[in-house]
Structure formats: C-alpha cells, structure tokens
Length: 336
Image (tube, rainbow, N blue to C red; front, top):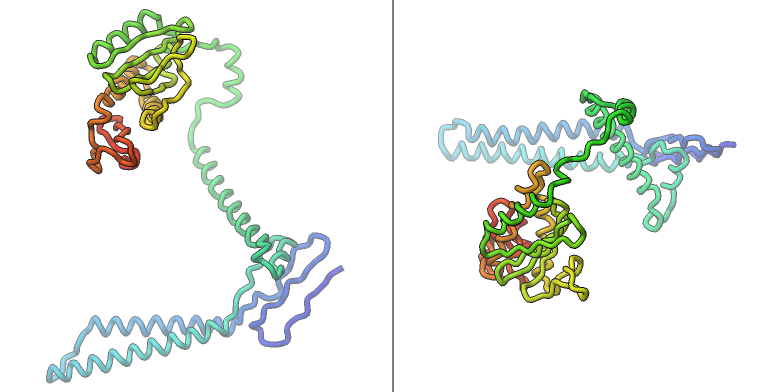
C-alpha cells in the first residue's frame, strides 16, 4: 500500500515531499526543490560577475592611458574605473536576486526509510537524521581509507604467511633469547663499573628474589632512586627525596610507594619515560649506563634554571625534565 504526497501546483521552487513506501522500500524524492531556470540564469550571472571583476583588475593593471594632459588622463581613468565598479555592483545584485529564486535543495539521502527522520519538526531535540548522515559519511570515508591501506599492504612481498608459521612452529624449537639470561657475575660487574664512573652517585645492589636485582641509587643529597631490574633490563623506577624513607616496615626496599613530594613524583614520571626511550636489547649494559647518566643529571635539580624561560621555579616546581640527548633542564611545560 503506497501513500503519495500531494504535489505542489504552485511554483517549482517549493520542494515536494518524498514518496513513502511501506514495507522497507527506499524513499523516492519527487523533486529536488531547485528552480532549474533560475539556476541556469544564476550560472550566467556568475560568469558576468567574473567578467566584470576581470575588467576592474585589467583597468588597474593598464593604469592611466595616454592623453594630452595629466588631468585628462586622471579623469579618464577615474571615469572608466567607476563604470567598471558599477558593473560589478550590478552583476552582484543580480546574482543575489537569482540566488533567492534558486531554492534550497533537499538534503535527503538514499538511506531507505531513515529519510523520514528529516521530517521531524523538532530536530534540535532529536537530531537523529543529522547524526545518521554524519555516521554514514564517516563510514564511507573509513571504507575508502581501509581500501587504500589494503592495496598498500598487498603490494608488500611478505616472506611468511600464517600457514607457514603454523606449519613450521611445531618443528622449530623455541630459542630463549640470550640477552634475557645473563650471568649474575656479569650483571654485578656492569653495576660496579657504572658506580665507578660517577663518584657522586652511590649504588647499592640487592637481590631479594634470587637473580632479580634491585638498585638503591643515592644521588648526592638530592634524591634516592629504586631501580628494579630483571637481569640487565630495567623494569621500573621509583624516585624519592633524599630524606624520605625507602624501606618498608619489614626492613625491605619499598618499591611501590610514591614520593610524598610532587617534584619527585614528576621525576619518577620522567624516569619512566626515559626507560622507554633508552631501548637497545642487543646491548643492555649500554642502556643501563645511558639511563644512569641521564639520572645523574639531576645532581643539581634545585640549582639549575630552565634553559627556555630562565626561571628556577614555575608553579612552585624546579625544572624536572632532562633532555635525553643534551641533558639540559626544562620545566615540564617549557619542553613542549
């Protein structure tokens, strides 16, 4: 059963209502609501306006033409320029008049019966149709970019496939990475050499759970850092003040509690970022040495000004950020 809207018998500028087909059929738009004759005239008006504007710029480009006297050249130039401007004004007025006659095109899209949502008189309260159109455009854009990504990936010549990996995984034994299992004596020697490199940094080595190492790094009288290591790989770092307690009630190193001071909480966050920056699995001793060199740059935490703003304090905090390459001091906001 079909319900057809009554066609407008007035000017063609009034948009017709869509045809609604019960049973899930697509809504058919009878009229786009555009005055085609006025639209054609508006295109001609745009061309005329462009020609008028071009004549204005040509007049400015040519300047004053050759006349007998300077006064005559100026009068001729001003008169010609005013005529061109009036022509532009005329064409612009005509284009505005025709634009009002063109009408507004219908915003209906072939979204089946969901197009009926646009007939809701209170779209401000229930903007379902506009949201549906936005989701539809986003879905098309996502599909387009996914197609581009798929074509780029298909151009790569992969040497392995899922079937080859599954077939060969049963025959190939799992090889334990050699860098994850290092002798305890080697780890102790690396830590000892690093401690000799920095006289103002004392490093105490603890092994609470067998092979795992925990370092208590005391940097002058500024801070204390607890570095939790797995072999020579640093897992996490906690930085506290020099006078803060680093031991728990049972006498073991407290590797979980944060510092009571905001400045050392900031340094802890920066140290975690440094752990992600210094990554070289093939040479873990270089990573530990680089991290300790970066940590030692906090020896003058409260004495070094910011390299950008030149201030010692910003929001009550000293420059807590240290550049990973130059080790220069910056406030957390100045480094961005």
